[in-house]
Amino acid sequence: MGKAYSYDLRTKVIEALDRGMKKIEASRIFNLSRKLLTFGLKREN
Image (cartoon, rainbow, N blue to C red; front, side, top):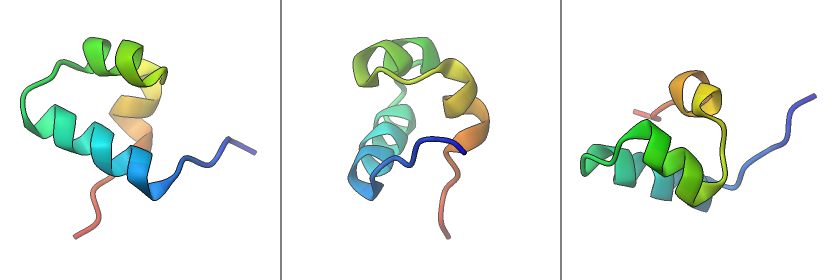
């Protein structure tokens, strides 16, 4: 089973991506894999 990430971390990552940060840069800053950024973080409507 995968590691659970906090709501706060997910929110910060999504906000950074919305502001135009590239996934590769976000993966380095937040210490997450690019695969997680592509498939794991989903927006809640």
